[in-house]
Length: 281
Image 1: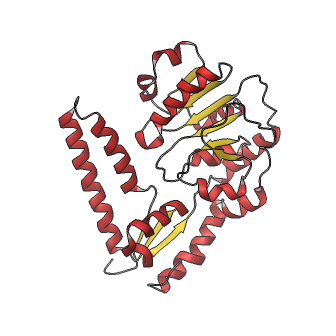
Image 2: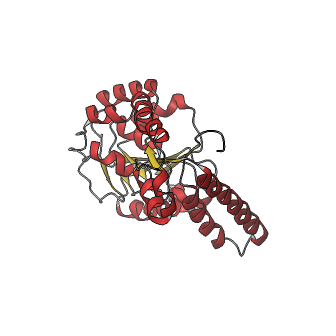
Image 3: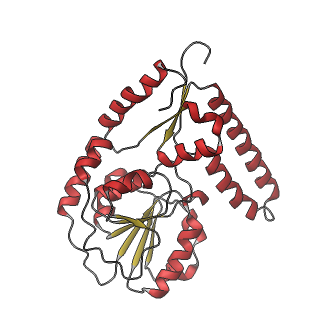
């Protein structure tokens, strides 16, 4: 920072993630007090380091509009140094998902096949997801659910009754080569995060042609203008009509959400800001 402009680039909202994980840890404090104390102390040290980095930075590059607005509102001293960037999938992945979208058949029915992808962590909205699964399986016995990439934590957290009937399937891990098959084999996606850096699973599901029922976290606000009929509020209604969920502004989307466009925006906005310190982005 003493010798050159310093950019602090965010990949997730660290303070918000720590707060969500700390709340979950405190709920378990009675059964593991020493582990909880060590976890909280470690998280506090990491967050202090993040804040020190922000104070030294010439520019703070936030991931998405939601994080940038939160920082400007809650940490007003950062406002003159805030800028933003988006996230996107790689070109080969986008080509494969585009082909999958064009070939996607109509849902076979009668029930819907829902897909949730993510780590089993408190800020991913896992408690919200478990409540939803319990309510939905009781109200809509024809629906089914896959939880993918969640490790062993999902099986340990779900009530035994949800797993017994086979309507909730757990895929603890999967190679990238199996992602297309996962997306092809489902009718709608679920995104339940309370705090999220971006959530590239959103891009994956939307680009493959899946409607996604999502909480207001991560990149949802930035993606919704391009998927107004596909990126829908969580939780889904009992009997959602997915017939209109194929409409999307894909031309506009690909003008913003490719690696090439993100790099061009970085050159146009971020490097320009570094040449003009103290200006608003």
